[in-house]
Image (cartoon, rainbow, N blue to C red; front, side, top):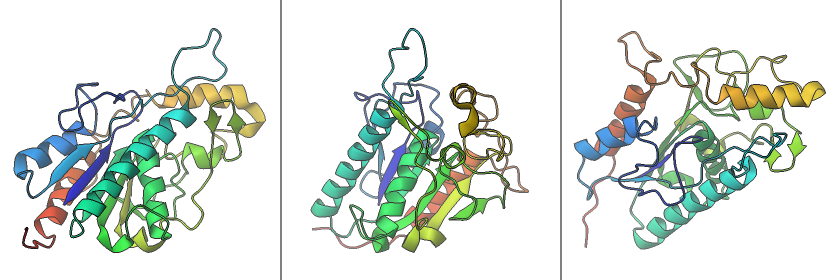
Length: 260
C-alpha cells in the first residue's frame, strides 16, 4: 500500500525528507504518518509525505511578504504527488493507494481524488482504497462523507469561487465531486473553521480585501489548528487519531499479493 500524505500551509518545504519530514516539527499530518510508520514495515506500507513549498502569499500585502503564491504552492504540491503516484503505479502495478491531506494539502488531495474519480488521474479509481481530507478548502457539503456528520457551510474556495487575483485563484467547487471515489472519500471539518465551513456571508467577493485578510487569518486560527483535539466520535477519538486508525484498517485489509 502506498500512503500519500500532504501537509498543510506552512507545514512542509520543497526540500523536506518525504520519509522523515522535519520542515515543521508540529505538522498535523505527522500525527497520522508516524503511527502508520511505527505500525507497518515499509514493505507493507510506504508512507510518503509530499514535500512542497506549502505557502500562501498575501496578494495585497505591502510590502510583499516574500512567500510563494497559493497558486504556485498548490500546483507544486499536486505535481509532486501525482509524479510519485505515477512512478509507483508504473513500477508496482499491484500497489493500492491511501490518500490524506490537511488544509492546503486537503485541497490538493481532493483535487487529485476528483481527477481519479473522473477517470483523469495518475491511477485508476479501483486502486484507491480511500481518501480522507481534513479541513478541505473546496468542501462543498455534498461530496464525500462528512465525519462525524453533516455540517453547514462550505470551503473558502467555494465561498469565494471566481476570485482571481495575482497568485491566488479560488477555484470553487469540484465539478462532478469525487466521482467514482465519492463513497471512499471522507471530509473532516470542525464547526467554525472558515477554511472548510465558511458561512455564506463569511467570505464575500463584494469585499475582497476583507475576505483575503479573513482567509489568511483563518489558516492560523485556533479552530483550524484544533484537529489534534477535535473529537469525531463518542469514544473521544480525535480527527488525527481517527485518520490514522482509518488508514491502518485499510492497510491491514488490503490485498497481499506475492512479490517477485
